[in-house]
Picture: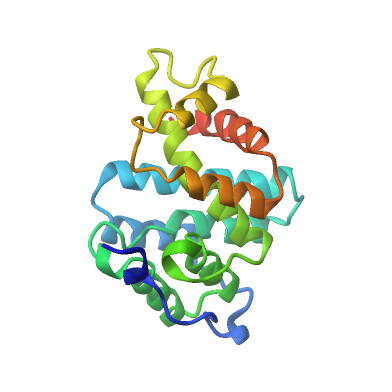
Amino acid sequence: MSSHALHLLRTTFGDPANSGNAMSLQEAQELLNSWVKNERLKLHMQQVAHLMKAWARERLGLSEEEQHRWYLAGLLHDADWDQWPEQHCRRIIEELEARRQDPAIIQAIASHGPAYFGVEPRSAMDKMLYAFDELSGFTHAYSLMRPEGYSGMEVKGVKKRLKDKTFAAQVSREDIADASQRAAIPLEELIQFVITHQADTV
């Protein structure tokens, strides 16, 4: 599938009148369980959600309501990939729009792969979802090859694997570098944050 095949062909998402609307955690989990049967993909989405909420809380000091919206963006960003990969992003965006969810959540999901969906990440939520997505999956793949998992994992170990193009070859190193640059956060800092917080999810 070419990168242009997933282009959303629009740049605005959701209705501003729905700002502040966010489904409950139970509703989001029910949607996730209904749409995603692949347990590894489900774990990835839960890990990204955990990272998003932790960043919103620890680095930005956002309210619990805002943290919840950040969590939802992470939890649902790949919800349509399992059953409808050729409609990736489009399907979940339409679902969230139909449910009258906060446009900020929908925008973040729409922009988590600018090279693929043609939508630029603008807000802090957008940029951090893009930053955590590939890096989260890559770091978890690295943990699975280590006998001790996340315990004792170091930034330099992750960076060494990033240079090895044969390891987790499907992960875009270009996207990871681009996301770090757009977020204006050193890659080493992002990696350390992922290591520290993702260890809590396994």
